[in-house]
Length: 115
Image (cartoon, rainbow, N blue to C red; front, side, top):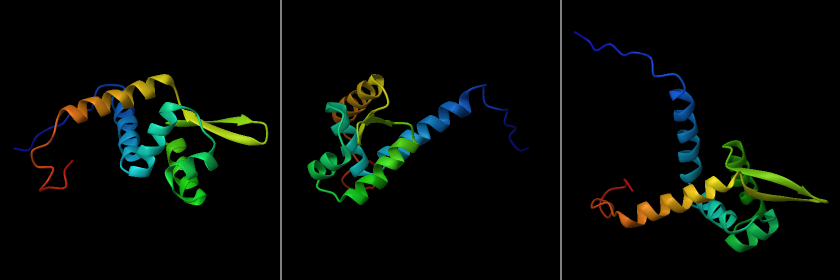
């Protein structure tokens, strides 16, 4: 007999969607560097591009992804637009993820592309 699956509890799909967006954002090293830079302080795109050593076009694409994922927001500042993390809890979450991940080393990391 086959297994029967029940519907997930109410709200679970929303949580799964949020985690999937977060994972997609963290899947690229440049986006990770952007998030860590914005964790330190809000920044303008040109300054971020220079600090990270990437073209402004490439940075713009990554910022759009992070914005679409709901992780960064834009703040108008005169004729310029400043970027910052979507909220202070995101900065705390990034710090926690880095702390936990650096404390635990996957034994297969050197031989498998899992971590």
